[in-house]
Image 1 (cartoon, rainbow, N blue to C red):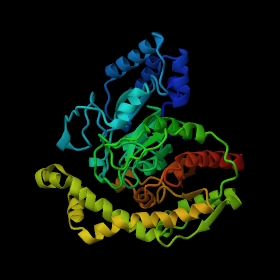
Image 2 (image 1 turned 90 degrees about the vertical axis):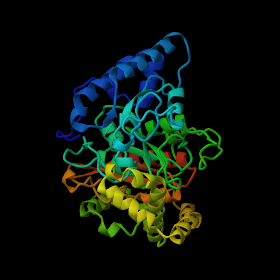
Image 3 (image 1 turned 135 degrees about the vertical axis):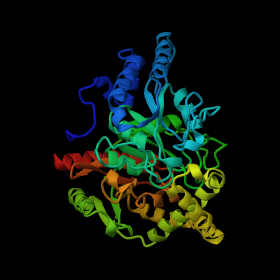
Length: 454
């Protein structure tokens, strides 16, 4: 990594363990959860005063959780797949033992009565919840205080800003995020980490702040593809109380992600309507990537994409206004001007336009799904370019993400590129409920490009 990045390479190397490696070391007794959590807390103490990735972290409480995990293992009990591993949680996801303030002063001091379903699943798998990460205001577009550790002076993106920054700085091996347009994939690209948004409904949203029931999806920020798979595996279960959750056999994404594809993948580069307006440096980086991939990447057009981008925008605006309208009515003075304006615009979305945008989704998905008869995955940028500077006062555009979120398709950002010492990810998109093949293709792409540039 570049020398100006805010990481702690000289710190305790135990904090650099992957999720899979850490869980294995703890289960075997070669490493204790207390030692791992302590190493992460040391980095948080050193780095977070500048990065400000955490909204809440109580070191004493984190250590007590780790000690409990160690006592459990030492008593001869079996260990879950995340036993003793510290995970951070975006601060719009409920935690019964920590504040959940949604990035808004309106909810200062809010203490939920129970964990979100995804947090409960992590605890059942043995995870130590080390703290809550900073989010933008109500998980929308007003920038948060968090800095980008991989690109000082630049935004970490939004709205999962703290989750991406915490992982990028090495303060925590993984964190939960959420995505309504591009709030997992874009921060992952900007901060140089892996961001995985699974198929809509694979992870329950019960106990997560709702801003759009059509779009909201829980995702993960990690250090590797395997870690993303392990973490999502731990949270994947049908939840009848979440309307988008669907019955399925328990996936083994970690196993699928590490498999070798039965045949060489063929990728489709979709020339989206936003491509022409993207950063010229990204055009150059993707041209180099296309050259390295050669015949496994084919550029194609899909005219419906412009419509999909607009439908996503309409749905998000209207549903934001529906969920947050009461806050605008009763707490307008505690909302940022940008959010007040957004909710006002959302309230004016015509009912007909909203219903048409909802009705169009399945037919639009079927048209995109036809591409997978030839292509293993779609390859696109996860953002219009590298992270904007902090002085711009923005978290970046989700224009390359929102269409896939609208369609409910799984996406992953892989930190393969860099321009002017700034991270730039590569986004892969898979078919709904085919998350394992997407992760396997992502790992293949990572290995392929590494060999091509060796």
